[in-house]
Length: 459
Image (cartoon, rainbow, N blue to C red; front, side, top):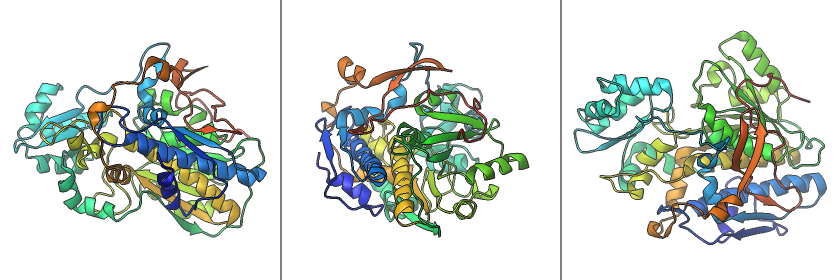
């Protein structure tokens, strides 16, 4: 794989190729798994960019860059990282049995996401299912036209999407809007003096990052910051649904605390945390946290020099910008699933590439923002979405999926797995994928359940 794509990703954030960049790309080419999409290329390009951003921060600390190595096959495996987690020898993550594809009355196919309890209840209620079974839900969906149930699910604040071809999506108003957006962007949101990186012996030592995200993309970005030395405080609320099992994949290196932003005390606590933070990553729909008083502009007032990172499903422009969505939904509406299978029999990819790549890009943006703060000053906002990643993956073209294997070899997979012991017991999970010559990435603490730590900085 050429490093041109890595530098194209970095170039979208204004980072140009340096003469002393040291990037080694190995692992062959796609397909790694049975998918026509070049997910190995996408994952390795995003991770290669992350590695060079880590090198830049190390250069700012020491005056010297470091070598970066990415294996394409390992990068592809990282896009299904949660499937490799074992807790005391058992696999903890499972999908709700109702989630999946359902034919509609007009010959279309609807994908429903039911992994959160309220989304499950909503899908059953909105569709008119007479029982909480897959058969009853299928019978109910079969009485709807596709576009009608897609709109009803969205209007009911639930999550689903109609399967589309690539051509149909590219002609859709939101597809057109997203096509005008870059893969990732960064905008200045406030003035602030330059600020050197805190002292420490790791690229992100002393950097404080608030992680207000759920599911995979956002928590993955925080995990990448943690594996390079940042203090990452993951903030969740007890009244919001959360798939705790996912923490066994994304929670390594972090502390997890409860905060309820419906209460004045919770808002004040978060205000205090922000005033000492360097990075604020949020994964809620556009405008959600702003309504609680935590818009990017307000964060920049509280903490001049902060780097804000926003991750959402459908981007910050277009008619679907405020719509709820997850990786599986985005695959279906954008035509990735129709290409993985057929329009009549769509299949999701064997990886969650939109989620994990978005997470890597969010971490990349945070690190490039920290470098800008060090060299130029200012407060910065980074924006990335699952649908922008889907468009980028589609732009990379396709390969013959039949040449991919269902899984890595036992020896190859074993070389990527590490073990940690902590509050969840004995966890086997993927080790950090980016190889760094001077500061090898590692997790300084094991993953912990939500609410295990107080909502304060440890130092």
